[in-house]
Image (cartoon, rainbow, N blue to C red):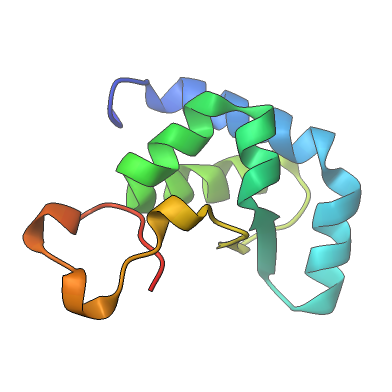
Length: 107
């Protein structure tokens, strides 16, 4: 179980997000092979559940999103990269502490 939300719920949310944004994801996939760039602000607008889980548990949530992407049939073996993360996630390297382990941060 990832955070407070079940894995199945996250996969369903991710599939819905990918269906809703097929056009942008297709353009992202054409630009670079096997990498899909997801605008984090669009993700926040679409699903608070998914965006909160990415911030609190990024590794597992991104892995589940990649599974959902493969299951949706858009592409196989694609990696998800996030862009346009909020300024609240930015931390200077000298300020990184153990409390930031397993959290999404921007350096």
